[in-house]
Image (cartoon, rainbow, N blue to C red; front, side, top):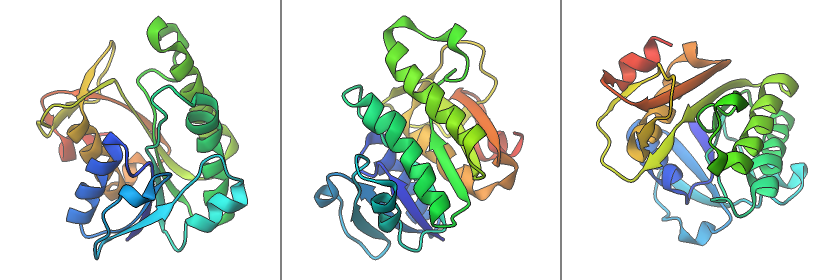
Length: 207
């Protein structure tokens, strides 16, 4: 399958590309710093500017059959990248007639009463981009909402029963994102996750 990854040079994006290539997919790796992406038989770097227009973003998608949004500004450009950039990508995906869209969000993004004060602005951007995806598009979306990301080895095991803050290996988050594409029961679902005890394939299958 031909897949477009928005945010290919980020921590999650790099791991996600590895997982998807292992599954046999062809990747269009979209990033502002596309020169940092290693070209291979399976990975084609694409310059992606989320400050661009919907038409400009649509032109970067090529013949992709599904799109991932895993981009993030690390708090430096929340409105233009994490919020409006995400919305413009959704609009571009619909303009191209692509249906499948997998969106990386944050834990409890749709539940403001559970937000941490330290991440309020970030959560606000995710709240509105998640709601736009659900209410304003006809995409076959999945929204993944992990807790805090850790650069630790992935256990390959998670939980999707989350009632409080969770920690997540970046490798686990990427593996879940890759598995979501394989399982149609995830379409039109919002999935909360944390590191846990259930193998990823089994956990996603139960959603």
